[in-house]
Image: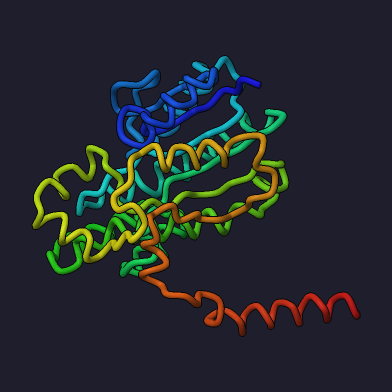
Length: 279
């Protein structure tokens, strides 16, 4: 059955590829981007996001079945925090009520394998407080120092994956029947990464921090197809996950055991639930 999708960042990269694949499958796509899409919008500002939501809903004739948030930048700038976090979360919250009216609503975001890499915890916390003014103040602080400027991007991606995990099981998302999830790519061959991997020296530097043992750097289609499944009617129970479609980079970086560190907290939660049942 044909569905109506809203895709941010549809003017290039993963968003553009996802839109093209969906249209080939017969779906309707309303793209949102600075340029090159159905809706021109600046997701770096509060007003720009609100305008984008209204324009996207209007372009979709008031009916949206799925939202895929792909818009993002990687500059060592406070702007990255605004676009990568608030440009996704505020847009999704703004369109959520319309999305919930669909018979099979779905939402997915782009995170990154960078979400598991070194970041700046005060910035992550400020983003998750949903206080943009405070978050930008922290981001400006660290971008003023070349030793920490590059932490804005991974911090924004850590925050977005944590936001998905926090919000997905809530009444507004799972309670409304909306699966909310993210995809964490590795190094995708898009305009954003073109300069990074243009030379053997640049590629070697990238590969040192994002090792991809399976099939090396990935085409945008590898991520687009996963986003399409997550936002299809077939996905009925995936909730709050960041799926690392990254050629094995997350496994290489975090190793074989990502469970033990959380056993104490999980056991405590089980004990709490069991105690409540006995009571």
